[in-house]
Length: 286
Ligand code: ZN
Image (cartoon, rainbow, N blue to C red; front, side):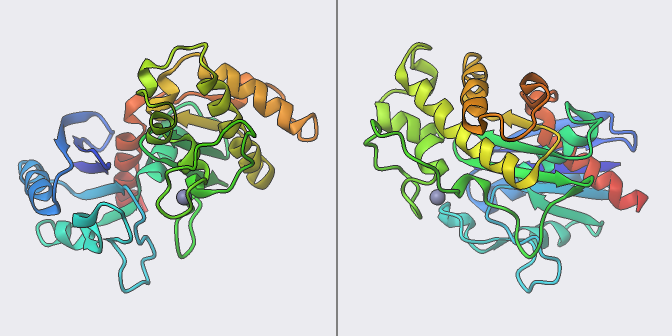
């Protein structure tokens, strides 16, 4: 049996599947302290004879297998999880092969193998929610070196009308500081879900996201970019992003069909957990 953990900042999703990826059991646990949350995680997996485990975790995390702190959550602002050795906390209880990566990388991998990008050679998966992050699949592999990319913390051009200082604790007005769910809420003093569709907030959001997407396009030239996360649940936002994106590229970069190029995830909220199960399956096959 295969196990997977999608460890997010607000909730952990754990799943068990057979070797053909049919999900047998799944639970959702609130992210509290490592001690409280991991106790429930370990209890869940103890019920099944898992053979391998794929983990995608909120970051930053150390995914460099040669590093002394491999398997750790590193400089997260979530203090109880800072410098927490996630992989060891699991291997103490289960001596099975483990794939450890970021939450966005496993979501990218899920969409790449079984979701909307399944017939492509490359894709980028972005999540726009509590934070902004992205995973890149190039030549069918998750892009990573000594560290995973931090695609939410790039620097973009501000709209002149936007006087909001930004809310990234490291950079103020990086992409995440200007366009994450909490940034939108703080700027307009209203929850994003309650902002009307015709509010300028969404034009601004589309302008910022389009710049990031244009930058990723120019750097990686992926086959497609998938936009997930809570903010993208606003159905009118993606069409606005497409318009801004094409305006920014201004015909310089060939995009055959923007509707095929910029899409929502096909696996909806399961991109991550399915990506985790796929990594667990890869461990047994390779
Ligand atoms: Zn930042």
